[in-house]
Image 1 (spheres, rainbow, N blue to C red):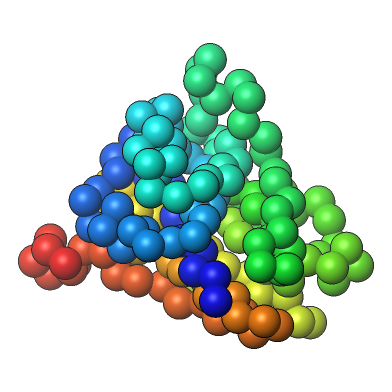
Image 2 (cartoon, rainbow, N blue to C red; image 1 turned 135 degrees about the vertical axis):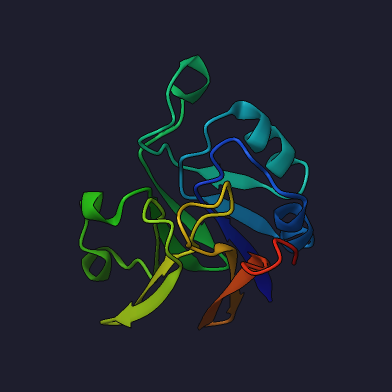
Amino acid sequence: MLRIGVISDTHNLLRPEATSFLRGCDHILHAGDVCGSEVLDALRTIAPLTVVRGNNDRGEWAHGIARTELVALGGVYFHIVHDIADLDIDPVAVGVRVVVSGHSHQPSILERQGVLYLNPGSAGPRRFKLPVTAAEVVVEGTSVVARTQLLVDPATGAR
C-alpha cells in the first residue's frame, strides 16, 4: 500500500493541520500556488515531493519548477497541473490513472473513462467560504482510492 498526500494552493501558509495530515505519506504532490520555497522545504521533511508551478508562483525560487509533472507512484501514473484548463494531454491515451489539479480552491473527486480527477482544494488561507482541505490517494495494487480531508472547521476555525 502507498499513501500519497495531495495539497494545493498553500499560498505561503503551511498549516500545522496540513503537516499533521501529511505525516506518514510515502510521497506528496503539490498542485501549485505554493508562493514560497519555505513551504516546499517543510514538505520535503515529511516525504519526497513532486510540485508544479501555479499562476502565483513567481520569482527566482519558482523558476526551476515545471508547469506539469508526470510521476509514477506504486505503478500508477499521476499527471499534475495547477489549472485543469491547462491540461494538454489526453490522460487515457498516455495511460495516466490520476490527474491532480488545484487553482479553483474547491475540492473535488471525479472519475471519467477510468481516469481519476482530483482537486485537493486549498490548504492555505481561506478564500471566501470555501473549505480548507487536502487529500490523499491510496494505491494498493491496481486499486486507487482518493478522499479529501477537511483541515479546518469552517464554523470554529479549528480542526
